[in-house]
Image 1: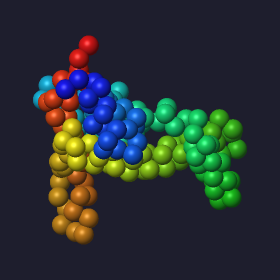
Image 2: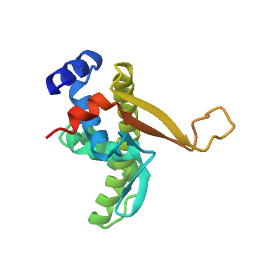
Image 3: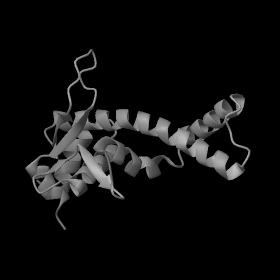
Image 4: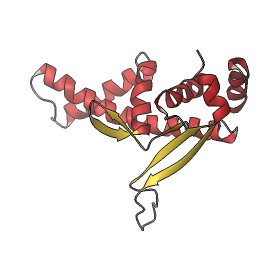
Length: 160
């Protein structure tokens, strides 16, 4: 397999092939020698779930997106209406940015999961979960995703 063949497989499998390719490339970059990434990634000495890291890494792609601007406006309006904005403008901007980051990360986790599902269907990636099982209706609680790039795709992504 070469890069054009990899791109063709992704384009045929995903409604958002650019996003899926970027996601696969990011996973390959942080993966160990076997191609596995997760369940956590260490950033500035702190561990964070791999899905959250992927969402944060992909945020620059959405910075100019009109939905992000509308999310910022909506969060500002909600906090303003609840009288939860600090008087200091810089502090208010920081609070708004934190709330926007939470929302973007929540929706980003869904986007990552969808793209990963597309990549799993065509055999470029494998996903499993690791962590604690909790005995209730949401059996996935306290478990985080681990992604493994298949060897053929990993070889293409790590070339050059």
